[in-house]
Length: 371
Image (cartoon, rainbow, N blue to C red; front, side):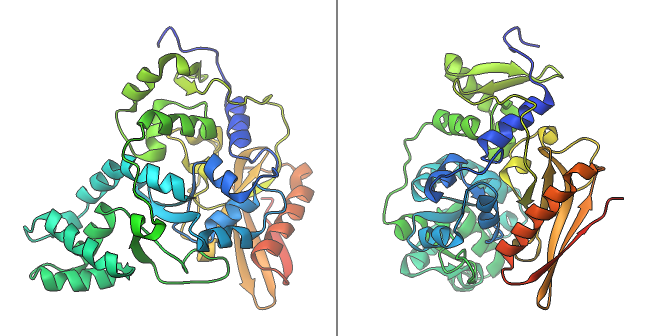
């Protein structure tokens, strides 16, 4: 263990720090664009998830405001951290896509699709794909079909996947708008935003952004969040710009100098997090939010973003799913640990609010299994 590991932070202290920085310790009054920037984006391969994520974080959140910003191209849905689609501000899309290109390239290189390009030069495939996307947004299926005509002998799927992994692309509207749907089409980032990518932003700024929104955290946490490697070299270069702590197990944690560290006994509200929430996926060691005793897998890939995890006293304590049943909705809550009876009223109140947000105008039935 390094001699400069620093003061020890308990798991509960890390929990409260995560909640505070992720705007989950209490709902805040903050413009939507500022919130999206502050939390360094929200995972968004399920289009409805960012709406539920922000509902948990912002006072009087209006989903139409986020939808307007999406339609106005002030925020976009783009493959970034961990090669997954995130909702980020337009400026962050232009900055972060070049930084994370190695992650997307490595991910594609590890797929079967990368082995099925028939020996063609990948750059030729990308140049052709870029020309097609410069005409208009296209789905992967359409890209693959058109490109397969140019590169005979190669199936459409691997060509379409290569194009959307290796070119700087995003998913344009109407997909991602509140209450609407649309095909998962792709457009060039620079064409959609009318601006050039920023290739000169240092990775150090990216690391500091993460620590501001997720810290204190380890180098392994940062790498697990974004997919980049060799970030120990980056944090070493930051040197005195970082403060240092340690976990109860002796692992080193890094942080920005002014990052809030709330009292570990600060009360934490009940929160119905969506699947893929930052607070549950932003770390290699998720024990600051998910108890070791929980023994379950987080729900993912739910219908319309209507599944997730329940925070009780700051920690994931149950899974939830909202099911529509005619003019009623059923909020089914399956505890992973025993939830003290004292939280029942808060769970019912927050659950009713969640159902009113996701399925307005319907009677709500809450099913909480105390066993």
